[in-house]
Length: 230
Length: 230
DNA sequence: TAGATTGTTAATCGATTAACAATC
DNA sequence: TAGATTGTTAATCGATTAACAATC
Image (cartoon, rainbow over all chains, first blue to last red; front, side, top):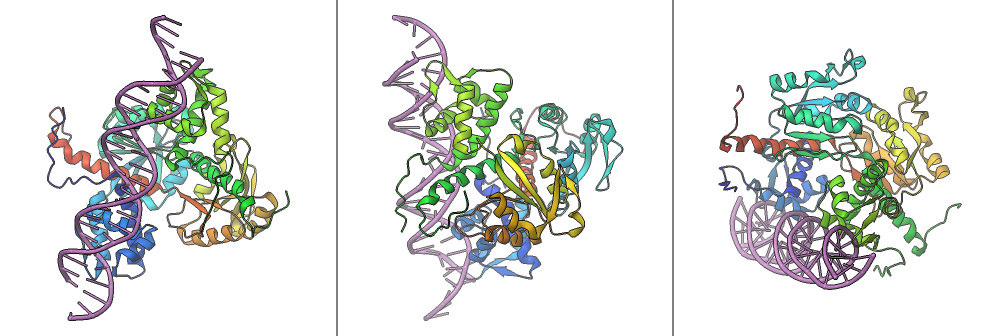
């Protein structure tokens, strides 16, 4: 069914590694800003918050960009990772749903500097379509198709309430968007070939709560612990 | 060094399973809201967006809450999962950094309904400490210790700029917070026993960009594809 | 040459999944 | 009893990590 001959530069990088490449990129940027020109895997791993063996293994999927006995050139490695991720040039992004979270996202300055450009803010509520947020005017959701076509948008951000999210995703997919970052607390159904990543605030908090609960259960076993008032 | 005799109810649930329990909880809530009283693992898995074998395996770590040949009682399973996560009662939470994102988080209604209560909003900027956001007054960051002590806060949310995040985390840890949800684009250093989870918008987008880039590289191989204008 | 550090191997660990016996 | 569906087993897959030969 799928012959898929391995194309030239398409090495197969494990998903866990892909998820860490942006972390390394950020760590390298921090080092570069500090004026560091060269770093060892041990040093970079410490800044990135990972095990150095894991870092070296991850980097080995990209190629061989270090020098034994010396380490890595910060700028060179940074460029290689940025190229591998695909953020050496900007990706146009649309954000749908300009409520509290949409505002925060539109104003987030980290997008621009990290390979993304917010080309449009869309909202279904006509009362919002007069507003200008972070220099970008809010437009009607129905303009989606036109914007995606004209600006060749491949990535969409869903920041709507849960009830609207699936409809928004369907419209995005229908007009050619193939990557979606979903902030709405719903599971989105999308056709094969479309990637969805989910950011869910209360799920993150619940994971913390689970561990927190176990800590307080374990507490009575700790000998040096001072018990608070009830 | 650590004898750690297995305490009564402290079964060891794999981390990957823990991360999915909140997803099941949300799916069960959706089913309950639709009036569904009973569901099969197949049905629940579809709503939660996972494989049914994985769902059954995950649930088996909690106990045996289904009925063979019948399925699961939605309300009963929902309660059991909520209890396991620890969200049958509310966790007090403080949010530090009331910028755009802090506003969005403070206004997020999903917290209250999912086991969390925002007891304080803190900001270091005195110009913000007059504001009331979502019914909660913004207070000075220096009030952190007092609030954490008085309200027995265990979970803190960092929504500050990157430069401030480590200091905020240090202060949180110093006054007894043991779980941190970090929205600042920095790796936080914390002592053992403190859990940190990170939500990073541009990292999520970069992961999407990586896969997006590979899609366009593969595109020429697709026979039925219509090429756009440049 | 001696010291440092990479890139890779191989062992280990944890997560996923299909299959099916148990049982309602 | 027949059909449905759970809970569990076991095989497979992927990720992590220590160790070290290669090499600057």
